[in-house]
Length: 394
Image 1 (spheres, helix red, strand yellow):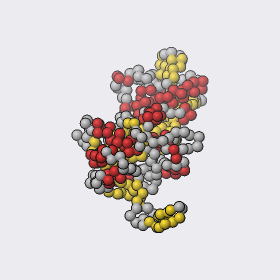
Image 2 (cartoon, rainbow, N blue to C red):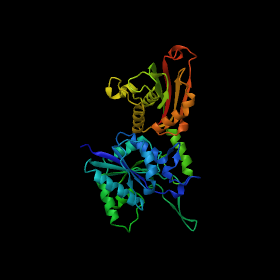
Image 3 (spheres, helix red, strand yellow):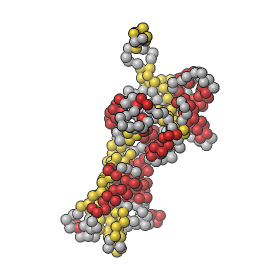
Image 4 (tube, rainbow, N blue to C red):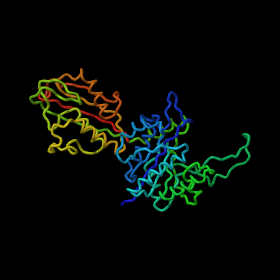
C-alpha cells in the first residue's frame, strides 16, 4: 500500500497571551480575515494533494466549536484527538492515534504543525516533503538576524554569537517511526523538558536537517499577531468568482419551488429534478468558481436517480466539493427573473434556506428579483430564469 503522509495539527492550547478584545475564544478559533485561525490551517493542508490525512489534536472544551469548522472538510480530515496537559503529551496522543491508524494504512511521514500558525505557503510544505525524502527529521527555520545580548538584572552581560542560531518554525516533520520512538523515550524521562518536537529527536540522537522557513509563517502568540496575520493572509488570498445561469419553462401545476421554498402558484416549473431554477444557477456558480464544469456534469439529466430530486442535493454536493478543494464560500448572490410569482415577500425565507444549506451567515446571502419589462419569454410569462454569483476564497 502507498505509504502515507499525515499532518498532526496541535490545537489544544488555551492561548492566554493572544486574547483578542471582547473575545474569550482560544486563539486558534478567533476569526482572522473572516474565518477561524484553525480553519485557515486545515484548509491549506487539505488542498495539498501530497497530504493523505490531517489529524487535529484539540482541547475537550473546544469539541463543539471544532465541529463547526470540521464540517467544511471531507474525510481527509480525521476525527480529532483530545490533547493532554502539555503540548508534548498532546503530540504523543496524536502520534498514538496515528499508530493505530497505521494498522490499516501505512503512516510513513508526519508533519507536526501549530494550530495557531496559519500563514505558511504550499511552497514551504513542498520543500519540507522533498527534504523529508532523504532525512529522518526536517525543521523549517529562519536565521537570527538581530544582535543578541545576554543580560542579568536588566544589564548586558555579553553579546551572543548569532551566526549559528536559527528561529524554529513548524511544520516540524519526521519519519513516523523515528518521532514516535523518540516521544515514547521522552515519556519515560519526565525530568527533561522539551520545547518542541525537534528537541525531542535531537535528545534521542536523531539528526535534524534545517530548511529555510518563511517570514510570514508566524505563530499567533500575542494580540498584536492577529493584525500581522491578517496582513499576510490578505496577500496570500486566492479569490475566485463563479457565475451561473439557468432557465426553466412553466407547465401545468399548482406550486413552484424557488431557492428551496415552495410557493403556491397556478403553474410549476418543468425539469428533470424539482426544477429549482435559483438553486441550479447557484450550484453552477460554485462549480464555475471551482473550474468543475456545471450541474449537468455532476448530475446528468439522463440519470433517473435525479428525476424529481430536490435541488438542495446538488447545491450541497457543490459546497462539499468546495470544502474538499480548500475553499470557503464568502458570499452568494441570486437574481430571479420573472413576471410572477412575486419574489419580494419570500426573499428573506429564501435567504435563510440557502444560508442553512451552504452553512453561511444569512447576511452573506442575497436573493432578489427583477422583470424584463414584459419582453422575451420571461416577460410573456413562459418561465423563469436565474442568475447567480458565488465568491470562493482559498
